[in-house]
Image (cartoon, rainbow, N blue to C red; front, side, top):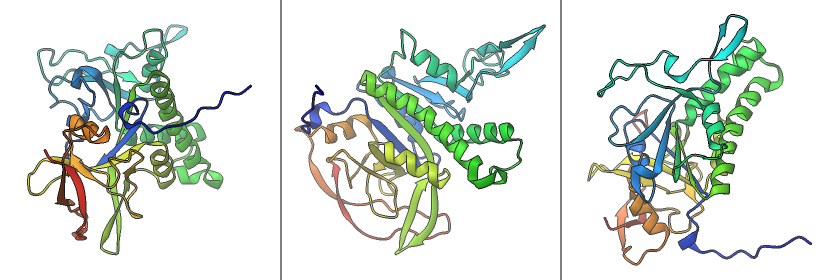
Amino acid sequence: MIEIIKTKLDTETMMSGLTWYVIGQPKTGKTTQLSKWSKIGSEGTIVLDTDLGTDFLDNANVVPILSIYPPKRKQGDKIEVIPPTERGYVYRNGKHRGQPMPVYSIGEIIQAMHSEEGLPFDTIVIDTVDKLNDWAEAQVKAELKIDELGDAAFGAGWSKAREITLDIVAEFQNYVKRTGKTLVLVSHSKETQITDNKVQLSPALPAGLGKKLVATADAIGYSTVDKETQKPVLSFEAYDERTIGSRIPNLHNKVFEFDYNTIIEAALKKPNVVNQVKKAPEVSSTNGATNNKEQTMEVLNG
């Protein structure tokens, strides 16, 4: 007999196994804030750095990721995997500056994730998914021997690259759901046209891939900087032109200081959460237009 689960929404115990998706322009605090996206801060967070963009983080746990599969070389009659410290990268700062730096493939991280030890962190941050897609596209072009993905018949190039990226993300999503951990995906944001004075926002990914990824995420936030306070904020304000929002009721259509404790306390309805009316931050467009629509939303009294 199949056992049926009767669901009951309990926000105080729903914060495990989730996928967060953060999009935003560069230098808006995404990596800095997400490097400590855990109840124990940076000690509970690992950043899979595909962009080599973590040099200025302090006290973060970082693993540089430079490919989907580990690079190999021929040694006599054998083909062997190149050791992580022999892949041509060096430390760019700190006491090890100039010495060989270990870099890995996403495949090696997945292998470690499924090992007996697993990944000893509460939160896994993939920064960025954009780079995973770049590698997937390059792999497909090499396999199909084409110069551009569009050269493949019937859109096969785009489809193959999309599936590779989605399969990688699915591996991590299944892992965090099984173990009760947290996954955070990061993408740069892509601004398109203006509709009804609103800037259309989406991940800087092929449209089909971006839509698939946001559909699998539990909360999609837009990282920006508050013009008044100059502090990073994370917006879950949703409308048709923005692929952001949240399944978590207390976050949906609200803007918060970009801080783990602030956002989780609001999500969990902690007693010290106070509502305050505040104007939503404007989202600047690359062509000079802005979203001037004034809306009120609840934010945490920081």
